[in-house]
Amino acid sequence: MNYHHGDLRRAMIAAAATAVAERGPAGLSLRGLARLAGVSHAAPAHHFGDKAGVLTALAAEGFTLLATALDEARGDLLASGVAYVTFAVDHPGHFAVMFDRSLVHREDPGLLAAERKASAALADLTPDAEAARAAWSVAHGFAALWLSGAISGPDVAGAAEPVLRRAVAGRSELSG
Amino acid sequence: MNYHHGDLRRAMIAAAATAVAERGPAGLSLRGLARLAGVSHAAPAHHFGDKAGVLTALAAEGFTLLATALDEARGDLLASGVAYVTFAVDHPGHFAVMFDRSLVHREDPGLLAAERKASAALADLTPDAEAARAAWSVAHGFAALWLSGAISGPDVAGAAEPVLRRAVAGRSELSG
DNA sequence: AGTGCTATCTTGTCAATGGAAAGATTGGAG
DNA sequence: CTCCAATCTTTCCATTGACAAGATAGCACT
Image (cartoon, rainbow over all chains, first blue to last red):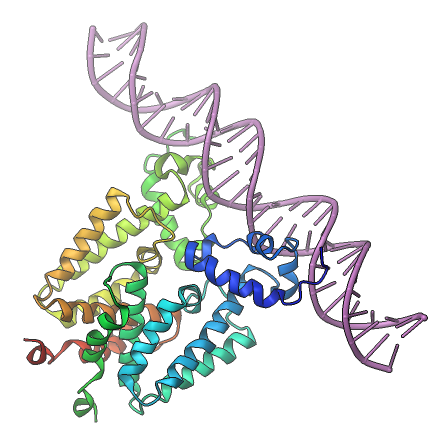
């Protein structure tokens, strides 16, 4: 066996993402991740400290990915909403961890930095803070409900778009 | 020690609600609950089977409570949204479990029945299915974001109301 | 009262897990 | 080539969820 895995940290985060997506955060086992990576059960502790550390890294990566997705739809509030939902559905493991304070180390610098990136991307969408908050809520709620199975259908984006439109489009005349 | 607790099932669900609210579902320990109730570590298994069984009962109770809250605001979509958010904030332990398929026994009859009650209460809000879906998404998203700390403020209902209004009010002329 | 039945709870046990401690190995800087 | 820091391993412990088997208590029925 090689003493050095080479890129254990990255491998662990990727494995954690799939594991959380399939079995939920509670079903994640540090020892299971270590087995998958072919290292001893104590190897993860070196990179992440503890279980919450792994999930913290996963959440941070999630916020970074989300910030990128939002930036790509810059300017268009509706497109950003669709991007938000698409991100959540494409990265369920990340999403399941990003907004759960009980699972991560809230004060972790890497997490805070990633959160700020995503926060900035959200703030750049519109100068109307309340409109942004509303758009965020619909997108987040729709994504959560879709992932939980409460809302389902053949096409996420297709189902999300008309819902997002209601909270996003044509409201400027009431808030301006 | 009394061999019979008297109302262990109810006591366990109540204790689970506070424990989940404080430490999250992962921080819940069956043995901890048993200690709180003053019974042996195996007593919970008789009533709930396993850990997921406890959370299933908690989720079912949550859906029943939610259905009641929604029914009380019957007819008014905006008031129902506020009721939804208020329920989530008042019962964070229940809410944290209700929409997480990885934590419960999805096929449990009691859970399914409670879900149907809540589902019916939602459907009774408006004949416009898409409007209901939009209202549900905003309310759910706002509640989740508020509970996660992503949105905060002095008053939940006060902060939620204008956000809900955007997705709820004055849209009927576009959908009718 | 006495008898059996069933739900409730206990004790004992096991494998798996997270975490801590201490040591081994590696690669690279000087 | 030596030293050092990062990475990983081995060993160990307490806690946990789950299971099996047995004890107790309330209750219906006679």
